Length: 174
Image 1: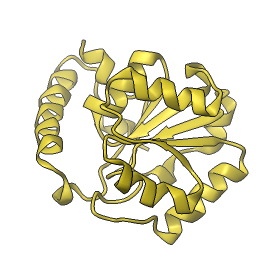
Image 2: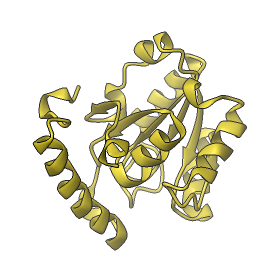
Image 3: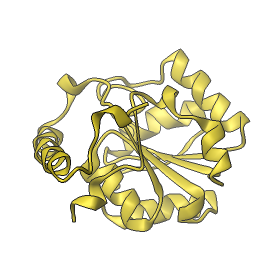
């Protein structure tokens, strides 16, 4: 059970993702979370740095879909100016939203990576379908809602258990 919460890769931010490595693995699509993965939970729009990174991702021919548990208004306001498709009210880790994102991109799980800041939603959801999962450090933990704070407590317990089993090593982060 705990193994489903282990990401394939851990990085500090999306900017640390090695796009060339993803290409080598045959990855063609990126499903990404929004809040605390791309921007802080209270930041309405992409930063110039993030907009440039997303343009580079697209320039390298990756397809991108945002999958967020947030509402339509929040996700649409963020994604539309960037010309990025999205799935809102995703109820991650439920599989339906991930399957919808795959359908939007016309890709299979083995061609797709999931990027997010939460083990219990992004990583578990992506791993359940067989996608490559990347865990990023949350951007603005102080802005998180109560449910995410509950998830963070559970994540700390899970991480401690994984460390005890020798399945979680701090030096793995890139």
